[in-house]
Length: 395
Image 1 (spheres, helix red, strand yellow):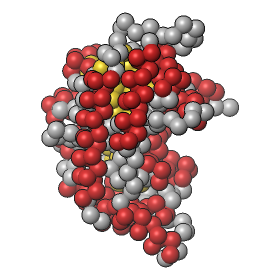
Image 2 (spheres, rainbow, N blue to C red):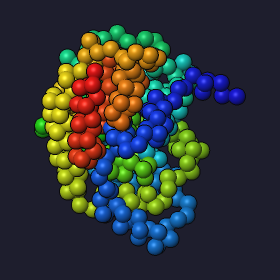
Image 3 (cartoon, rainbow, N blue to C red):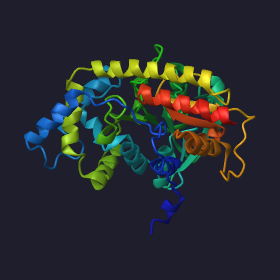
């Protein structure tokens, strides 16, 4: 039996999702999903694929046209020196991409330095490959970026890779070009791999720049870049991601894992990806502008309505508010929550119908914070803020 899987926890997000199904008229700010519809070019391409009977087995790594478009996008937009579409493979969403990377790269006991806090499936995928996630704290005072000396101190003889996620889930922090250059240099000095999770590459605010680690040269051969259509094109449920890797040996291993976990990604969805890339990119910028407006709306509401119980600085990227809980706040009498962030989460769900995720679910450094998703529509955000005001007025 795979007893090692007993040490791989489910994310608390699953528990919260179950809790929210029992709530009448909930505000679903717990879900990392946008309220937008996928662009018409995606839907039309999928309809056409069905009409054209594109329902059979495909090449394991992806439809050739999709791989060509992705290679061109990576060269043009990310400045990654892709030599051939063979360096790209399509996955069932970003989480599957990270899974096949970890399975192909890690040996039992290998350590991967990861941010703390961090998206829970990152650590779960490392553990699923019998690796060991090693937490490196991100600091709110640094805009939710790491102290590079602390990061260097986490490296041991067992370290195999450094994982970065920028823009970052759950905090919205964005690594600077200088940060990524320093992390690449650190990895290079120690002969490490770099796993760069760029799921939120197109969700940036206030003119902030996104930098792909694999574009910086020397470490490209030991960098694996993970992307998804989910956030850029509002295709979360369609499950379409992709991975770029230069190293041929690692790529061959990853292809095996891809084959044995999916054979090929759903044909109709891949044609939807072709539609996304061949169609107008205007929706991507429209989504970003609207998300920035929703960010500002939500943070203005927190300042005016949260009674100082929750606070934070608007993020530079992604679409989450990672808010600090006032140290003076105390859970309700009788609460049996295991932490303050869980107590706050349960309090807001039970009293205000407001979905959120406890910061500790993202790592020990996330304790005393809660995460809200502000990518929901404005009406839902306004309703959640009104309910929040009522909840804190009651105390």
